[in-house]
Amino acid sequence: MKPGLALRRIALIAGSTFREALHQRSFGLMLVVALGFTGGAWGFRQFNFGASELKFIADLGLGALALFGALLAIGATVQTFFTELEGRTLHLLLARGVTRGEFVLGKLVGIQLLLALFSLVLLACLLPLLWAREAAIMAAAPAVLFTGSLLSLSGVLLAAGALWLKCGVLTAAVLAVCSFAGSRLYVLVCGFLMLIIFHSGAILTIYRAQSSGIGQWVVTGLKTILPDFAAFDLTSAIFGDATPLAVTGQLILYAAIYMAGFSLIATRLLRAREI
Amino acid sequence: MPLALELRKVTKDYAVGLRGVRLRALEAVSLEVAPGEVCGLLGPNGSGKSTIMKLFAGLQAPTTGSCWIQGLTRGEANVQGQIGYLPESPAFPTFMTAAEVVRYHAMLSGLDSGAVTTRVAWALDAAGLRAVTGWKAGTLSKGLAQRLGLAQALVHDPEILLLDEPTAGVDPLGVSEMLALIRALKKAGKTIVLTSHQLDQVAAVCDRIVILAAGRRLFAGTLPELADSRRLFSTEPMEPALQSELQAWLAARGHTLSDAGWARPALDEFYLKRLHKHEREERET
Image (tube, rainbow over all chains, first blue to last red):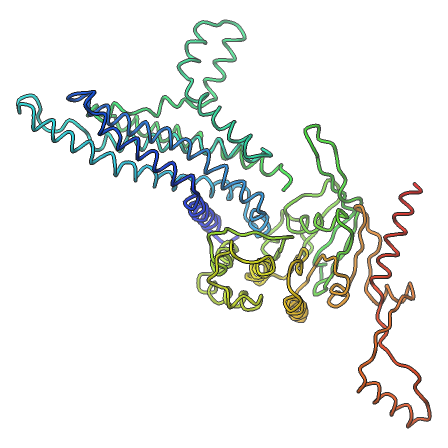
């Protein structure tokens, strides 16, 4: 095989996946609703004052990114995967020598590109809102109370980046289920269950403390194997709490390990599947 | 020189349902296709034709037995790159134009950027799609989608072509063009395996016929072999001009011509007889 052909194939499949997902109505719908949530924060701002108001707007905006980003990750992955499978375009790719691994990675990268676009559009709406309110608050308050900036641009980007990585892990997990599942509905249900389970790290910690014997071993095993989505919550960085570079690096590594693991499982299962 | 394609006693089982009940699609099927040969797979629905195509295309693995492509197993070298595959009822990304679809597949095959444009134009032209290159794949009729499938199969200039019902849904003019293209590809030395339910089309372009039923091979051989062994011929009328010429030639030698016609192997008759015999045998057992 020519050097670089695998990367070219992954890029081509990613590009095709991205374009297909972009043409889906669900993408436009999610984007409009998420933008509505983010913009709606402006209307509800009178319920909070000062820094709390900014936090409220940021929480609502990033919350929309987390929720609708996850829904998009599940929906777009299921849609694009099953379209290839049921439409037999996957047959054409595999007969051409594309490996199952290249296909899975292409899908993952394509959906991540879509989620990156989704995140950027939401940030383009959220950031002006935050900065406008910050400027208004700082102008109204005595100068002695605030110096510099209330918000950290890098913090907002970091928090959004962490959510994007979280969606990437979810996409990879959904791909793993797609690779053996027989129907879209099954994968959608599994996707939502995984979203809930991966957010249950704190509950598992409490349960582990309360249980003993085999139960404790099982919970410890689950907590070790399953990704903990709470690790991707970096909203505290928005207000200037500096996130050490090492923590950022660890988070990227953490997400990369899970994405690689789930992609590997997806590839193995797809290889065993009768096409 | 190794065979272009070969199956050695291949059995293929599918697991069906939650209990994984085994459904046998092929049973100990052996098949040999020489380089440059056009081989037609015939058989009723569910006889295993598409399964054979999928085995050769590398989409599935045999349960037992082995599958060889140009003397190599599927895992060896880049044998998949030597194959162009047109599946039954192909579908394409609906948002891409016909030209984009073929370009996408050309690039996936690893063609150099410089060669891609030339090959894409050639493949679209060869498949008769020059007029619709800018049309979205989602708007193409079944026949045009079939032609697009053929274009993507040809674009990387493969040595072997696997065409699963290539003329399904294609209009008569398109069928005629596709058969002419298959003949041209054969002339260029390509090995072609095709499946079809249209026996006249198979007889028109194939060197070798394989008849399958219920996953078993009932017959494999060339058309003349089939005709000679079974003495099955159909007679087609000879063109009047040729008939007059023949009559004159015989008259010059003191003979008379009472009737003249072309004797062709009667594939349809042989095919139906063979299938009915198989059904009887199945019922008896």
